[in-house]
Image (cartoon, rainbow, N blue to C red; front, side):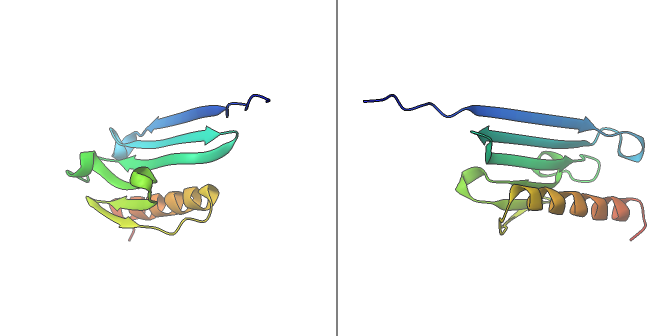
Length: 106
């Protein structure tokens, strides 16, 4: 019998500490891959000045607890998942909408 090849597992984590009006806030992306395929993810915008619950998580998307869901200001709801790239695009769009509200433009 041949040996089964173990999957190659990697993890990336990017943390961006914001400045200016959002000094102290954080944008974070954490992704786990298995053989190059996304198998787990977490996208989060943390700003404790804006949100005092859920560890300051203003907005987040993740797939913990075996389900895809969205966090917003202490609330959580299921989300439809098609691709990770689509979800990243949605996260970026929603963060920009939040920033427009924070900046008084909406």
